[in-house]
Image 1 (cartoon, rainbow, N blue to C red):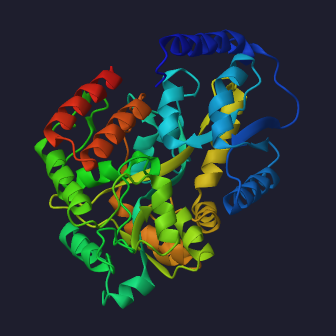
Image 2: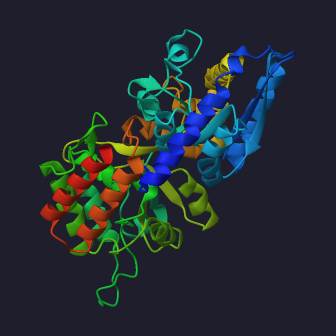
Image 3: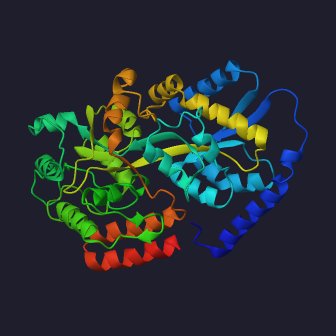
Length: 421
């Protein structure tokens, strides 16, 4: 995904050096005592506490593998993983946003987990298939999902009641109709004091909002991780529909970014917002009585891009460490532990055999579990996903600004195809 060819070449060189440094690991003498693993992750809130408990419980459950966690920000992990691996000082297990894993897998930083996935004790057969697609590159799985949640509609129940709306919308037309009713321009100056929907046109949640709208019209961005399909009638239909809603019906401000959308909703100036589970705490902190609903169905489909996090075994791990990491992954995906992780982290269960009533102690998780079947992995297996999403970001921002949609789709098509090469 590097835009600088020299930087990309340097990164490749780093991995080559790392491979040379690691080549002798398996020949080293077997250490005495339990296998020691380091685990980098970026979970810093309540999710970090429950993950640490799970690691501690795993360590206490057996005497063959011991894991030590190191908490870093996601940005620091992204910046330091390759240099650390090149110095043979990287982690054995690392968690990162799911869309970043194909980047590192392509550069040789992660071990192929195909054999573990095909084993009987992996616990992977019950995993959400789309979550597995998120960590799969060229048919090989390089990670284990730790979180996978579809974008969803958060709505202000108080504003809904004031507008006489009793149910969350389930189709695009219902969604737009509700957004119009919830848009209030009391002084008639053309700038609403309250918007029906905070619909950002750039820098959206993991850039997955507009792809979700494209899915609803039957469109997509990429096929088989290799072919751009941006310039389609389906995507044109989605853009026409929602650009008109923003520009003509004024249901949302133009030029809005993701942070601005969060602020509109949290201040009570937007009745609906599309986001992830963190919006529950933001709404609660701001006194918003909120509900959660699935992204309404478009004319062709109901699907929403899912945000995910995954953990993998780095290439510096020797055979014993790989086996130890896989033992932890199996433990983590066990039904009881997976339920514990879901309740504590706020993410819906990764296993499809965990029902909503098993997580009833957390209403947010219940709601997200109910809508989990709408999840769709965003650009699975696409190494240069950031470049692809940058092109879509440019497309949607300029479309909402009023530029010609046909020309923008053609430009985005070329940019995405170039990124895929």
